[in-house]
Length: 385
Ligand SMILES: Cc1cc2nc3c(=O)[nH]c(=O)nc-3n(C[C@H](O)[C@H](O)[C@H](O)COP(=O)(O)OP(=O)(O)OC[C@H]3O[C@@H](n4cnc5c(N)ncnc54)[C@H](O)[C@@H]3O)c2cc1C
Image 1 (cartoon, helix red, strand yellow):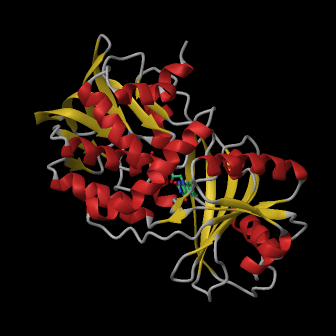
Image 2 (cartoon, rainbow, N blue to C red; image 1 turned 180 degrees about the vertical axis):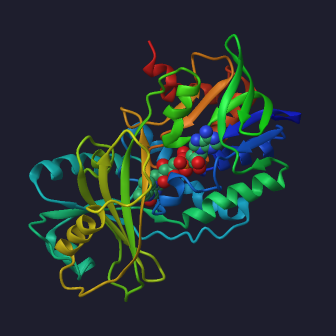
């Protein structure tokens, strides 16, 4: 027997990761009656796996880079807006280059960054070695040094969540959405195990789980995921001055082969956060695999062979969602009148603050506004003919 929640909402958001919490904040701040439903605890999905990078250079297109730039500039202002210490730092990023092909590709990227007034430069091996004395160059022909920030991802998520609560959003955790009441092409209610909730607009902020929820709606929503594994070490002396990664990081993270790509940064407490072991999969499995930890450690050791033993404190694994063009899926689901998707954000931290603002205006102000035009290229309709 289900309890029918005794109030109706303007907006029901499903999923309390970065996306759902940022949206709950934007809608409640705009005085929309907002409900946020989460099947587990807030920030327990892919957001809990996040390394906290505020990436720039891995932007998929030049258009997207403009969004990333705006989002990057917005992050430090969020500390005041959300009244939280995000632990904002700008360590910068080094992308290691191994071939002329890499070099040519990144020369174009550097130009793109420059054209938007962002810092980036190609470094020769000697300069790279001077900047990062602990690295073993391993046939590296140089690197790209580019702007990149770092924050505490939990503070980011809970900053939004707490601010949403202060703006009177209703936040209910351990409420897995298991069904919908549908009248023609409109969802009239959302069902959990024990409750029924009524709302005008339903937003799926369900990240890697979006295709699963699509099954409840009989729609094949084309968001897939890989299993991504990472680890954190005990605190050690300062050995890194930048976040360092190998090329094609995102192509490998969302590729179709099992792979290991190196991404490593040192937290200001001294811990190294090292990623990524990737397994293509159709099932969400949260346990770390038996090959993930040794493979990541091996890759790290290849570049930092002289550090001596470093103890691993914890490993974790999470589904990493993506659409096949590697761009976010944001907009009305064409099969329904009132279902909106907000998932598969490429470079989540620098883009979600901006997208969440635009999404709330798009939904609350209607179709004929500037946000609708901005969001058009990310619409789910690009996948449905
Ligand atoms: C190892 C790793 C490192 C990463 N590092 C970075 C990084 O440094 N910088 C960066 O920008 N990005 C990074 N990312 C990506 C980033 O973490 C994700 O893009 C982001 O967290 C996605 O947020 P989300 O809110 O869309 O999804 P999620 O955080 O997955 O939130 C979706 C929520 O929906 C809930 N849910 C699902 N189904 C239901 C249901 N039926 N009912 C109710 N609730 C439901 C889930 O429990 C979950 O909490 C990393 C990802 C991984 C895996």
